[in-house]
Image (cartoon, rainbow, N blue to C red; front, side, top):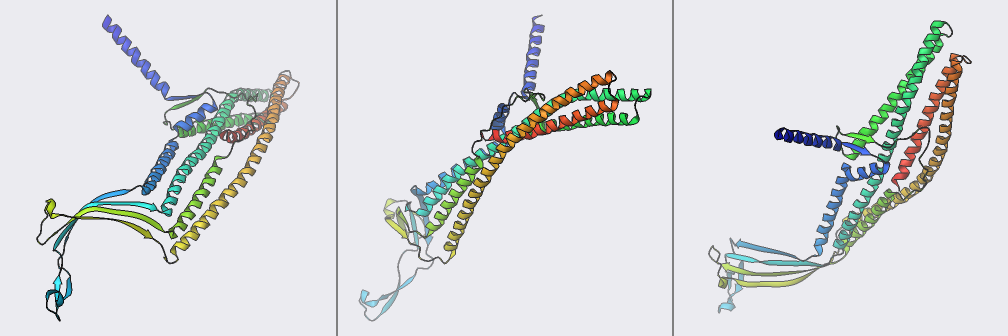
Length: 439
């Protein structure tokens, strides 16, 4: 008996784990802020930007390392296949008036030691370090600009999906009305109290409702699947929206606060990098000063071989300063500097144009937000009035006060008002998605 209880408990535990795993594969979003937070955290492109920032930091460290002292160990051997001949006057060996061709040196010589070096003054290396440092900041600003764009994409998809979800719910009510009108028109046609035109109009309204439903379903599906891409989820995962928009009441508050455009910071930083690049190219003409040292030993032999005895090696050490002053390198460096200055001017113009366009676009964005808000409020009131009129016409038609044509026309006007309201609402939330991304 106990064995069966243990097996049952294990099965229950495993089934609970399966349900938990399945639930983990369903992403539940309760608000637009939650959706944006998930996208910023899990978007696949975010990992790419993080790697680019890391790469820029390593590049900066590698360039900065040029100011640190360098040390290397070396060992070399040389076989003098044929020693050079040096004419020597005979007076040196007591035979004036004669000349002897003598060979100096050993056939084999070896050198080993440690080479030390350090840049004391190198303006170009300093500029390259500043460029690498600013490239790190540029990569970070590019990521910030992408996050802003990411927020806008998520907000638009989120709002579009919510509106489509609400439209699908409203469409159920519209479908019932369209079905009843088709049935009534056909009944009246058989009774001889209406004509075939009324039946055709009822079928047209019925098809329009079905078309609206298909379009809403398409927008809903596209919003869900595109959100999966942005959120980095699997294709088989589910996305559930807990929030719901009521089409008959606009509950969203208007927020006109607009933050700075992150893209402008990218243009500004690109101009700064271009300025440093022109300075770096100009510094090619500046002198450079470096120090070097060698701590080692030499060994010379007439026979092939290498002795490790300390007596076989003679010390070889030196220190030195190297001052390099560029005098003339043709027009190459001059033209490179001019090209860098032109690139600096291009970056400055791009930044100026971006600021101007951003300022104009921001003004237009806020105006469009206000205008579409008024349009949505008016379209909302008309939508409600058309629905109320439709219900009144339905009652009048039932009581025989109006004809089928008037009732069908009221339903057609209601559908038009509904589509107009949904379109204006979509435009408004598209604008608010941009505003939200800047907050």
